[in-house]
Length: 343
Picture (cartoon, rainbow, N blue to C red):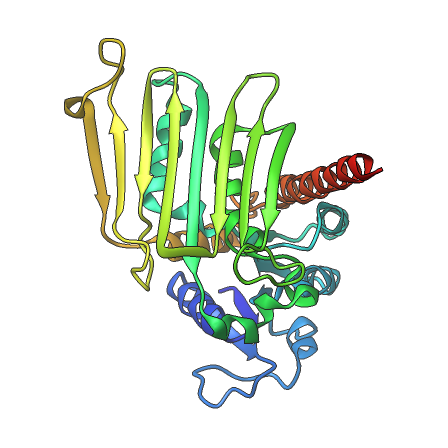
């Protein structure tokens, strides 16, 4: 039995404890910066007690972004396997540092890119990889939620803890799915802004368009926290068909039903008809348990991490770096142009 220590026992920590226990793990220790008043597991006096405990095989990190990279490094160096929530770090360079330590220790490290494990996404991936629909031509992702003023009191509204806004918090999932389903991007254009909440360094909207110049594949993203009606929509269009996922099965139910529409084959030009479509309705969220099982089995059977690896983390953080950099570059160009006009 693999023994887990969980650092950060809020909502996510409790969920991870439940799912790792469900797949056969033992929850040996838990810790949270806030006092834990009720728990079914032994409580550590400090997070370092979990990292250094001989009774813990794998450390689970459910923390604000600022702590993910340093504690991942600390746990790996202590000889622990690590499961860490996203985002993995503030930048791709920080992930590269983790990769080097991971290689040196030989321990398993997996990041919580949970959306890969939803049934609809698993189905899309199977269909894309089958080759029956040809290559991916373009993808479009929209992912949005709304927040109220209480958000301003959380760590996610603090640049030094969060590292960024809605792109790192939620948009990172959609970017990871783009990479998972379609491959890499070498051209990026983006607008990053705080249209409503106007927080310094915490964006509430990102509009990004990315291209693979070799294949011509293009993907567009709108990541927002001013989506007053929560929305998840992923569209994948290929040479001979398409997959459209609307909704995502979650515990809160705020993103609606998880419904995948697939064109079985290309009909006569110019377009498919409604009769060509097949619909899959996923009513149970198995993503958390599937994700936990993947990590558990990777440790138990010494298998490679196949979803949420450090390579996956580096790719998505590199893309996020470029989105932020592109927006800053465009802003600098605009300021230069305005100054030239004034002069």
